[in-house]
Image (cartoon, rainbow, N blue to C red; front, side, top):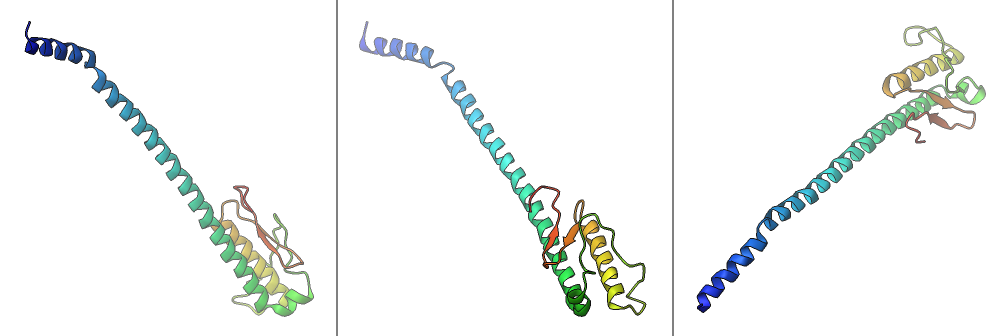
Length: 146
């Protein structure tokens, strides 16, 4: 047997041992790729969830400033009385439409609270809010985040 014959036999033996190894490598690469894609999908889902939460908190902040601006416009009633104090679940509000009628400060406070509560309900899921005597404003977040 010549040296070339031995090399050919050795190569054939090595090829027989290597048969199927490429397929296993491809399968492992697919497994690693699929795990990476699942991680990417989970990351995207979390990003969308946090983005939605930030969007709702922005609306809540805007509505809190709206309530403060309404109190500043009716400063005398806001500082002298507790007409702007409202709790979560309260349906406070005046029946008089102060946009077309002349209103007293107390009637304007009731109208402002009614408008504010309606805006909360329209823009936030389960939208509700509180205004306390200390001046703090709290908008309830149904996702459990303050």
